[in-house]
Image 1 (tube, rainbow, N blue to C red):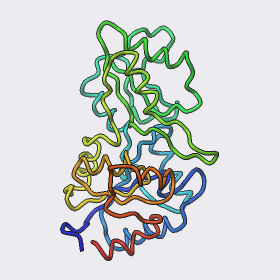
Image 2 (cartoon, one colour; image 1 turned 120 degrees about the horizontal axis):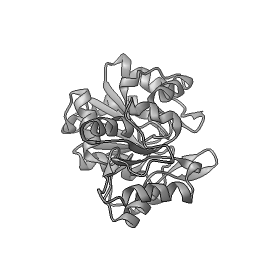
Image 3 (tube, one colour; image 1 turned 135 degrees about the vertical axis):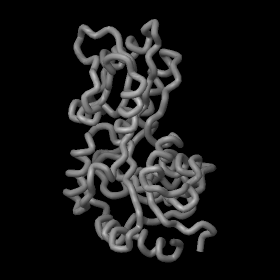
Length: 266
């Protein structure tokens, strides 16, 4: 039994519940077990290529029923910050459907826009090109120095055809070129985990994070005072675990093993 038994759970999505279009075997059953045993949980993802409505639909396709309010994304967190701090149109470098989660904020998307009150960088995937990256850079170089908001700092993810660059490499390129330190909305930022804990009404000491990203999920959770469960699915790489100073509290073959682990430790 752990010194602080687990009472609540934060759950990563891509690589934990599904990988590409394939369900992780046993994921739906594990979540059904959590619901049946009234284990408080929220889904925390750095996904910025889809709005929450699409994430809900995607989970439904894997046999998992959730509400939009059960999912915390970096763009939802950033939108709240922008409503309080942004003074003018926002330059959001995310796929068009994801803009729905900015919920009415003015956007600097027309070619005539030369100023933005903030530059938001998410996962544009193959839509990134020199012109797009340079447009973000030019916004950042305005005399009034708009902030650079990073929708997570995930370095890469595993698609069906192999590893792909995620948000962090493009954020770091813009930060290096502009000299602007990014404000991170998403994992591994402690504030992102704290917001999820506030939604659950639980403490870091009794809330665990389960994910496939050793740095973003496990390292980020540990820095925020939580403990981490690493799964050997998604982007998990045994070599990274062997050479990293980040040590998860436990390593599970997949989320399918969670009910057994929870009964032993919760």
